[in-house]
Length: 207
Image (cartoon, rainbow, N blue to C red; front, side):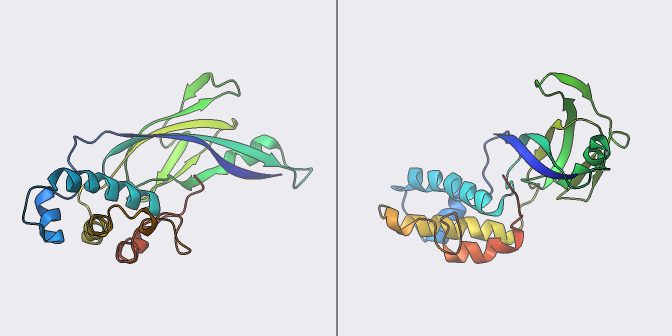
């Protein structure tokens, strides 16, 4: 048997205190805007640009709480392998939408979604890495739920500039929906200058 690790569902809650990674004054300086008429528009573009870059990179630029449900799906590979032997190794993967600051809980659930037990760090599960952490869960159940916290404490300068570039692009192309769309280079419609800066921070995820 082999295991196809499947992210069953993911629920992301933005829990930061309302401050975005860049300020309105920084945005206006970057866009060379010296009047107040478009302050509301530029403020809304800050959140929009930050969100679309998060979607492109599959990371969290601001603090969030993530609840991740995972499920193991067995496929027959060897008639000699026991299901529990395979399940014990399937939960070994990078937690999506990092960087991860804390893991609040890892819980095993049965097929009906009823909680069976809360797992213990360095006994039932192990965590490796620094910012983008890998977790390995050891149990004989196919369903687990992980609650963890993500987001940068200090945003890297290239990602800050990517946000500013995306705001400028959307500000200059406002009203032209055709200019802001997915292209052959990315499934998310961000501008080229932002994409070049953000590419090194992009993570792979199946969600």
